[in-house]
Length: 322
Image (cartoon, rainbow, N blue to C red; front, side):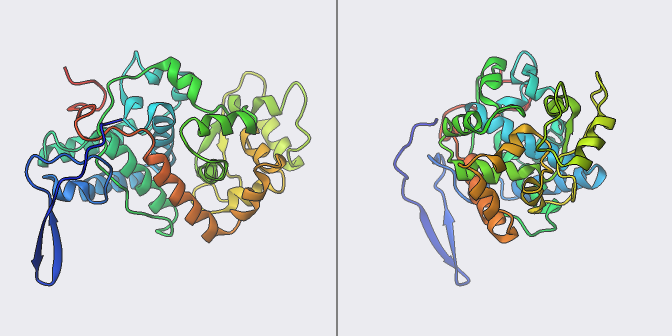
């Protein structure tokens, strides 16, 4: 994490009854702030990034869950530092990351913002802004927030670190709780963030343990039968994580868990485990879930971030600067 320095004074100007905050030239922020780029040489950064992401999702709706998953898989390893974007050998080689998609959207946003403000906007901030935009679009604008920015890009990307840190779909609640706790995230936040499974797909290999050698009795019968048909031995087809409203960011995921319609072991156990079932129940209310998800996304977005002069601003999101 970047060295935390005392915030220097700022210059305040009163213009047309509005308070404008200007950061003196050369000042480096020591923490994430809302509107970082508006006072650091690229006021159009967020609008450029959101426009690029919106266009990509309009062209291919699968980009929304893909971008949200990139954010999770980035932050849970060594913090939100865009280390998951680095090409092999890197975190991309870890098995959980081999099915990530949406990298091209990040590249497009980076290219567009570089044309306007070269060398200023980090890949890590683009990942964070892309995740929020994805949620805003798939929720119909009902779930959105101002993303604190000012992250810098990391200098390390390890497949071993990713494999150890990223929760697996077969992990029990205790293991997932431990992995989130290692990043300073609570059980309640872990459950709220699991609600991201309200959109997106999973491969048969992610839940085949619930189908054979013994059929998981907690799976609702109609779902179990459809999954057996979809996933014969050796198949790696895909199906929706949320079987009721698969393209809509809503609270249906949590209601599904209560009636045996959770797809992954890691989903289903949130309902069956006493340490998490109460949070599942609370999040069946959309407004509760929305508030919990937003606060948890902001918390995750603050995990071990690099700020100030730590890390770098990559020219190419796929490679460390030479």
